[in-house]
Image (tube, rainbow, N blue to C red):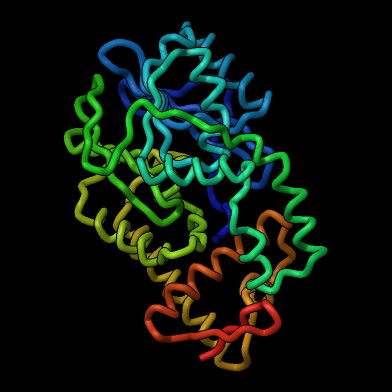
Length: 331
């Protein structure tokens, strides 16, 4: 979980053509990432909207003004595709579906995960147990909960018209785009890839200056899934990456190699900590980041440490024991 650095996203109130028949717009976010990209891809008639931004008035007004500047009506959006169900990518989905009458598409696994969250009152049902097992102090847990309170309003019980499993194609004015299932950042995360155009919509799977957060999920090895999905993309011919955050870029193979190396290095750092003395996930956050994290980023850091511990436990590198409800990890 590296923080943004390097080039900043160009923030304008108008869509930019980043490739013929592909328009990009950065929508504002109320936290450190600052913006999230949404894309309009020309169809035979109308447009496919990839991701929706967060459900805030600044984001909605930015999108409304950009549509108006292009002379587009909401009904010109014929299809909406969500790369994944995180709030900054799906927050306005319900609002835009009502305005446009568009068809909604996402991965089946992601739709199932969204249903789990919305049925739990827009909250992960196993969150309290994870905090307890990670050794999170009650005061910090309350601060994290307060930060997430406003974010959770972005989780709506959506009813997709089309559910993917991976390998399907969407026909566009540029030819077919293939759905690639890339579990890791989220269980049902997907990318869109044009073999003819060598263009990849990477969502949060590949971000130029940021290592995507990989969070623990019960019964899954999310870090292994993320690295396996990255390795499956090495063989793709990609000239242009259109990410969920940041500017278009290229060089996915070098990025994949560096990112997989980063996660192996993080595993070695965690191994070094627990080799010295038993550690809870919460205690390890301060050692691994060595800076004051906001409550929301502390949450992400805990879940990322847990994802690495899950990966290492399955390899037999670490194990844990119960210490009054909290799990202490050791070799």
